[in-house]
Image (cartoon, rainbow over all chains, first blue to last red; front, side, top):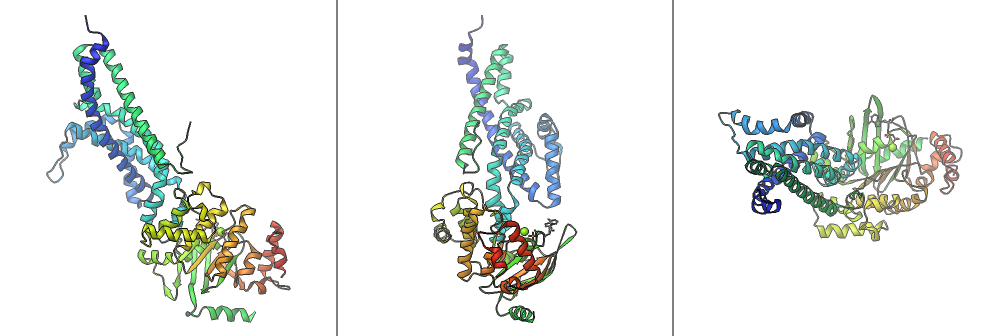
Length: 231
Length: 274
Ligand SMILES: Nc1ncnc2c1ncn2[C@@H]1O[C@H](COP(=O)(O)OP(=O)(O)O)[C@@H](O)[C@H]1O
Ligand SMILES: [Mg+2]
């Protein structure tokens, strides 16, 4: 009847998933970077921004944390082209729409961790920096952010791990990343259980790798008083 | 005490005042925390702020370098009024006024050396090499050359405060403001910080210090300012205010402190009765 699992994996499943894996990485890495960038910016604005800016960033965070990611993905892909500003509209291909959707959503969560990190740094250190003649900007960049980033890193890392998993949603707007590819193979071969269990292993490996990289970063930035909590 | 007013008015002459504050008012949470405070300090002078907790000492010190902007009043550095609306001028002014805090406020992610160096690089624009040389020299001055690579988490309270002093000194301040520099320290660590402060005073540093170390500051200060409810209610030399037969509030306050703390090692009670 059908070929044994190992033969199926070698000949069909692994080569297919390998292609999907590259697409996944192509979506995940820029989304994660975008998310961290947006999260840093929004987090800083939420703590140090003038009130109107603070309100706007708060609204952004509520909106993107309060709506399902599927809806957001559909919005960027299907609805965005209908929004015309001065006669122009933006049409994104599926990969671009996914990166934007994941980056914006991730940024909302990242900003929470960054904000927590910023608030954990005692105001006295800013006063000390100002007293030395630093501008507020220099104090935030040189004194507060490096510490806040270290404090926020475990949370931000977790968020990136979630991002790796929810990147599978890109498949609903026809991106042939890991999950999209797996769905196609499953449909064509009727070997659902084997395909999706294997897919799970791929994500597990990705998440484990990301976890290692994050620990490497944490250790590289570790100084006394900011060590990674060991379990 | 007519001689007191004479001394005070002589000092307000613009020629020898390094830092001068005129008519400072500050209201916080509905309380008048500073109520028309005037202050003027000449080069190489040491003034000590004493008074009960909540008197407004910290507020005054923070208003003096605009960490907390006063509601009204004027601050003059070497006779020139500081324009607090100009950010550039404010930063330039603050560089020349060193500040020491009760709880040190070291930058926790930087080593002792980097704490001293960071503003030299970012504010004064020194090269990393120049800044490092200067930072090492300042750490040596406070007796911490061998602790340069340690982080705040691994320094004792006394060492942290000495790093904070080195950090302020590296900016070549014209005047130093010290807000209860030893109040957060364990008793056995107070001495090492006081020794550094004494060295500074003897080296001619101009200082305004809030403290409860009465006998120590009596031996350094040119003038005591006794604050209560946001006002300077008494001022004069330590000998005048604390001397035998003085019925000053300063005297009563100091006697109470030394009674409470039993400042035996420091001999405050003894010196309060001078
Ligand atoms: N942020 C604030 N809001 C309201 N009141 C404050 C604030 N900060 C200080 N105060 C009040 O101002 C007064 C003076 O405080 P402070 O300058 O710290 O006194 P000191 O240093 O002499 O102990 C106190 O009564 C204190 O409660
Ligand atoms: Mg105080």
